[in-house]
Image 1: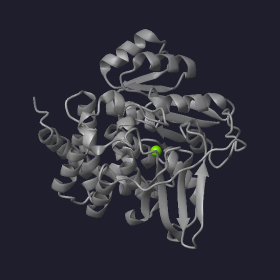
Image 2: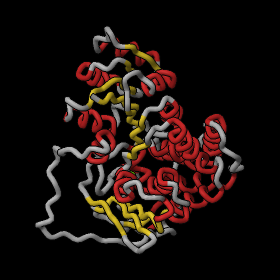
Image 3: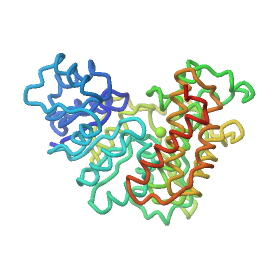
Image 4: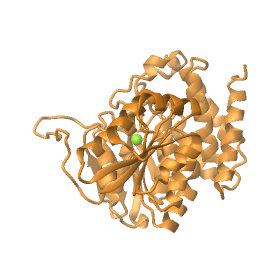
Amino acid sequence: MKGVSILGATGSIGRNALEVVRGFPDRLRVVALSAGDNVELLAEQVARFRPAVVSVASPAGAEALARLVDLRGIRCRHGESGMTEVAVAEGAEIVVAAAVGAVGLTPTYRALQAGRDVALANKEAMVIAGELMTQEAKARGARILPIDSEHCALHQCLDGRDPSSVARLWLTASGGPFRTRDPRTFDRITVEEALAHPTWRMGRKITIDSATLMNKALEIIEARHLFDVPGERVDVVVHPQSVVHSIAQFKDGTMLAQLGRTDMRIPIQYALTHPDVLDSPLEPMDLKEAFLLQFEPPNHDAFPSLGLAKQALARGGTAPAAMNAANEVAVQAFLDGRIRFPAITDAVGHAIAVDSASEATSLGDVLAADARARDRARTFLGLRN
Ligand code: MG
């Protein structure tokens, strides 16, 4: 029985992860769960899975949870320290890191420090502190198994091959809802339009990131760290059908791609059961029916995010952390109706340009850079009042 802890249990990835666990009752069991403010759903999950530890965002949330579900025999915690307790809970062999944004960094890092394997959906953690995370994993013999569909695909295509054999990693991008929209109208994009993703059903933050292609920009940095391949060798190709999840191109000219349905339960199952390959409850793709796969280069003028990721990687140090922080602030401001769509990438470009790109040798370094960049982004976007 493999014990599983989940950070971000009530989000889209967390809910799917619990469904995967439920599908393998003789192999997987829930040890600990953390969530933010969705106490009602967490209460249902606690009642069903009876974890040993549970954590929510605030003390008020913890009290609300205690009113909704019997917590006898369960340790109930809150805040970042509570999340960390979930991350290092006794009996958890693998931690699903599915919190959204920088908030998931410290608990995920602590999980690796404690030698736990991490099933990583929280790509922001890898963007902010990729080197620290991969170093820690190596030092403790912990594995980082990507849940992000593109990186899960690449993990399969690379299958442990040496990074020096890789010529290029191609991350596929759906192109988002504005792939064919006239960029001159981008300042009129509404929140509803940006939340209507053509191929994937996901949480709000990642859906906006997909509309700006910032999601793919974050994924470039994530891939650079996960697979130890220089940023210059990570590229993006637009593939509107989202059937090919990514492609590894090797020095001998061979290209390996991974294909599958657009359902996050597939990469989650892969990560939780790796290296075993088990039956999926999902209907398999059927190649007896005709369908077309299309690939095209991204439009860098309309979507500056990809170039910004390359800039942040080239600057190095704390620059990727600044990039991520500004994006988190700007996405929230866009969702709140306070800024226009193009201002998101403007803020990110500004954050990379003004960050000192100083060395990131500790979690403290990157968290300080994160805080500075949030502050600057709020000023840049006029969010002070
Ligand atoms: Mg992805």
